[in-house]
Image (tube, rainbow, N blue to C red; front, side):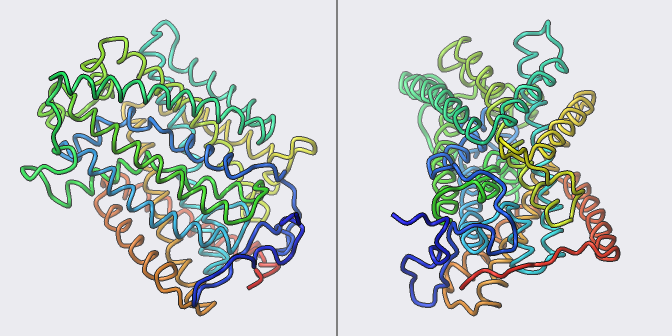
Length: 481
């Protein structure tokens, strides 16, 4: 069998419908003017596992109370709408990852699909997600572990998580992939235990019994209410897009990137809806939770305790801490380092970030920088009462803003530049995805909007400086059609 990585025309294989544009394949980054520096070793399964671990199958455990309150109890509906919005985004990612099979995620896609300055802004906005999310994950995990083992301070747990994950990422992407698979199995086992015990408890008369109020409640439903909750719930979905940052380490066809993103999103979305539906029916005092919120972040664990007793509440809390602080932050650190590597390679960030380890073939300096930023931010936010809320809102705003530019890039590149007549994939999907995400951003918390626009303004200033100082990156080769 011919190796698609060494076959220049490999990306033109496969049938395309009428009006479709042939996609790029895994033929390397050389055709775009770069050297292949990262190690191509990841399979479709590795990519799928990576995306699932990044999203965390039990992610709703940690933010369940906030979404429940924000949605007026319709937490499953919030996750269903969030999944739909991300499905359109995943479809756009799939198209762009085939056209430009390189690291850099939305920075690369907007830069090459629209114009390089737009790519910088997209990369700058998603840095709010990629750079801040490891700090958020470490902080949530450290606080959770401190609530279980109070004798060890939060800052000690935080440092421990950062050092452990940095060491794993330093040993290379293959080692990270093996650890991902172990962590994913553990998370799924805990989730299965909760679902089985929860369903049995509901059937036995615990909680409110089975009903459809978590998906629709006519007494409290409103679009503004639900979409406001969606702006929180999408935090659980962020991570499927991280698969695209591994494009230069994917050893299969470039189509694997898009397929892995869509598959990971579908599996995770289904799990999110099911687990929040069951948990919502087990909440001991839903009216109080809606009225007063979940300041302690224990709403899901309280629901688990109703179903199976204190041991199940403790199990779900420990699983959340490990999943967020180790598994999720591990892959978040890996994805962030690849984004920094790609931007540094194009002279948009300091050149030392493009250094690749000679034997482990990982962006070593970028990995260490992410660890340092996560540590400093985590320790600072741990001192603030609103640390978790502030980081969460910034992460979501940055990611969704970058996704908006991604949808624009699909239309500009395929319909505008390549004259595609695949109206569904290259026009309808990105337009629908843009509309849903724009409405979610509009209904986001005011604090997130204000801080997000400040970050955007800083990015615009930096972009102007880069252009004025002659650091505009050159597009050294165009993709084959």
